[in-house]
Amino acid sequence: MGKSRNKTSSRQGLQVVTLCISTAMVLILLGLVVFSVLTTRNLSSYVKENLVVTMMLEQDMTNSEAQQLCQRLNKRPYINHLQFISKEQALREQTKAMGSDPSEFIGGENPFLSSIEITLKADYANNDSLKWISKELRKYPKISDVSYQKALIDSVNQSLAKISFGLLILAALLTFVLFSLINNTVRLGIYARRFSIHTMKLVGASWNFIRKPFVKQAVVIGIVAALLACLILAGCVFALYQYEPGTLTVVTWQVMAITAAAVFLFGIIITAICANISVNKFLKMKAGELYKI
Image 1 (cartoon, rainbow, N blue to C red):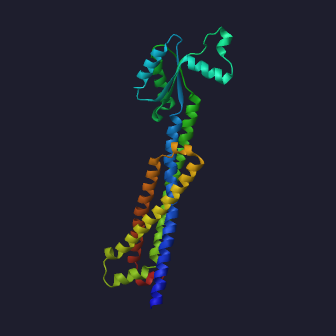
Image 2 (image 1 turned 180 degrees about the horizontal axis):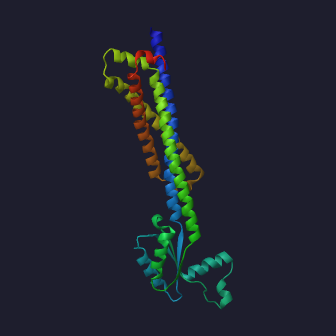
Image 3 (image 1 turned 120 degrees about the vertical axis):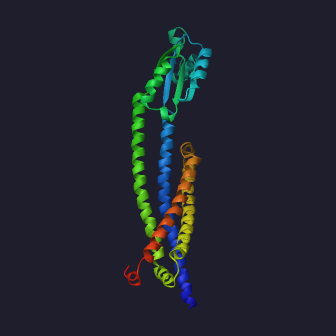
């Protein structure tokens, strides 16, 4: 009798471990999907906010006037960052790049104009917004030209839109698949105890009383599996950081926190729902039907 109970306990313990591992593997996939979607969104913003709009200033604009213009521009809602490049700085940079002073060939005069390099907030980094922004910038006094790479911006926005759309479709499909996998995993764990469920039903236990321990166990398994999945995902992020420290520009703490929260919520809610569905299924069956499944 004691040996039989030990075997049953060992079998149930093995089933719980198997359920934890299986659920954790599924949650890792879910975490990767959420992580990819959030990282792509951050990458999109990072790329857009590094596209440069150049304002060329007229020859007679002084550095003090240019600094005042920068202060005015900083108040505009679409400005992310701007940098004033004086004629002297432009000359030094070109001299360093070319290895010789260009002014020596034109009688010592500085051939370069002052400029202001602007990066926009991600929401404004598209050609529709840039059309009216460039018109507004040209209205400022002593602005000779406003230029930006229209083809590059179109290409970046189209590529990012395709990637985002593809990831959203993948996320929707994987969410459905992951729900099915977790549902099957939980159902297998409850299947082994279907006769216990029927016995409790025969002795008059209410359905809520029978369901409660199964749902509780499923939630605990979901929490443990989510914790295991988060640890593995954190290890992957740490390895990525060790390989390329610059990834923290895109992989922020917010991304990691939202991913972990999604994994835990999915692990708890889905396992509870699946356990509830599976127990109800066996509760509705008659004794003869339990032998046929």
